[in-house]
Image 1 (tube, rainbow, N blue to C red):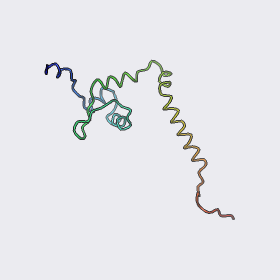
Image 2: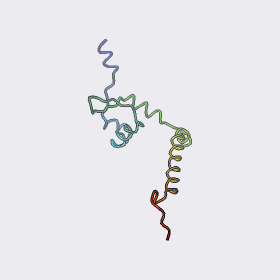
Image 3: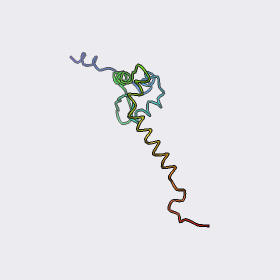
Image 4: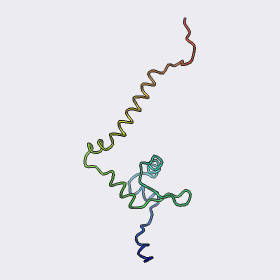
Amino acid sequence: MANAEKSAIEPLMTEEQAADALNVRRHALRKMRVAGTGPKFIVVGKTRVRYSPSAIRTWRAEREVSSMAEFYASNCDGAQEAAKQREAAAHARKTRHPLKGAESVTP
């Protein structure tokens, strides 16, 4: 029974192996991990990060699309939110008074 259980557990991948499997740089994988947009990972000890091959496969499968239209449709919520944030920032720049809080001086 112990041998059957051992064979059911797949070996974990290092960060470098996972990045190679996804064809991305390690830095990009780290950024995805921090942002919460990358594959699920396992923390071993206090600082070591490992990935299961099944988590890599699942993450890749969730991102497969057959057209750019499908991609944009699946990401429209994020795109709309980003557009709203850009619009709000542009409005804030336009309406910001350079001497806000300063007394007006008339010539």
